[in-house]
Amino acid sequence: TSDSRALAAAMQASGVVVFAAPSGSVADLRQRIDRGEISVGVVIPADFERRRLASDRAVAQILVDGSEPMVDTVARGLAQTPLPARAGRQTRAQAPAFEVLTEYNPERRTAVQVVPALIGVILNMTMVIFTAVAIVRERERGNLELLITTPIRSWELMAGKLAPYVLIGLVQTTLILTVGAAVFDVPFNGSLVDLYLAAALFIAATLTLGLVISTFVQTQMQAFQLSFMTLLPSILLSGFMFPFDGMPRAAQIIAQVLPLTHFVEMIRGILLRGAPLSAMGVPAAKLAVFLAVALALATLRFHKRLD
Image (cartoon, rainbow, N blue to C red; front, side, top):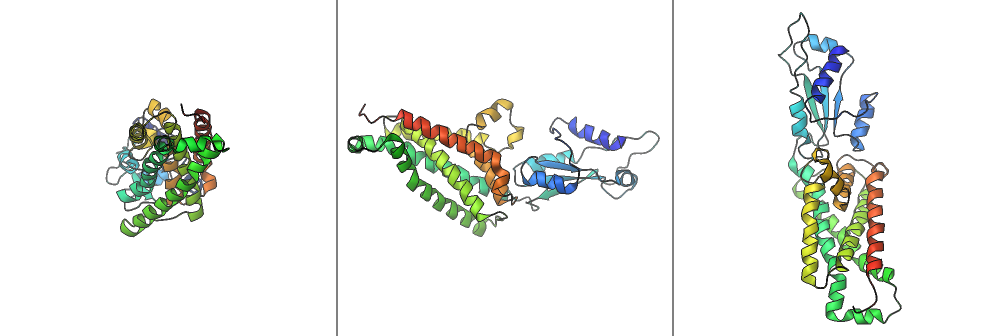
């Protein structure tokens, strides 16, 4: 109706939302939230006008993705949008315009939002450091001379450096998941296989980032410093602390280069929303591209020479 369109226009005029294409049903709207396409859904029922005339019912509903930090707070602010006034009639003020329903985290607990993404933060910190010092340590200990004399090729050396650390990263993932479920009561709604496949892809991508760093530095101290320089942007821009869609466009572009950005989206979708790995195809593809490019760069940068 004209009134419902006016209400939607008032929400958009707030400047904090951008409406996506409308959904034909509530089920489709929920599926889009499950897949991570949208963070908030607005349900305007067929009996909107009747609800508007009532004095004790909300006229519409807001569905919120509770797996993302701060989104629920923004949505509840939107719920205060007043109903547009009607000529000749008194605007109803007894009941709120919207009913807010927080999906996946109805208790609005911070731990549910933070712990899954914390897996990525810890893996990002440890995995990058592990491989950032790998080649440098070989050079400082004199083992690089032995590697140079072997017939092993550069890409084989890089792959060999990655393999054991992938297993270590999966062990770390298991420990954090166990602590999160036992101590913070974090729900597990998705497939365990999908989760470990996503974690393995992310671990491999972050390890290759460390390998690239190791080809640019000369000492282990330099490797540590460069590794920590990549950590802070990952925490601030990945969506771990702040909603990704609320960042400036320039920050979003930079965040697309960081593996943690895509893993945070994947693990929240799989772990909290119960989305299958197939629904996480876009972030998974971006991680795979990062892995391929970084591994190729590390291989090209590494030469079997002492200089």
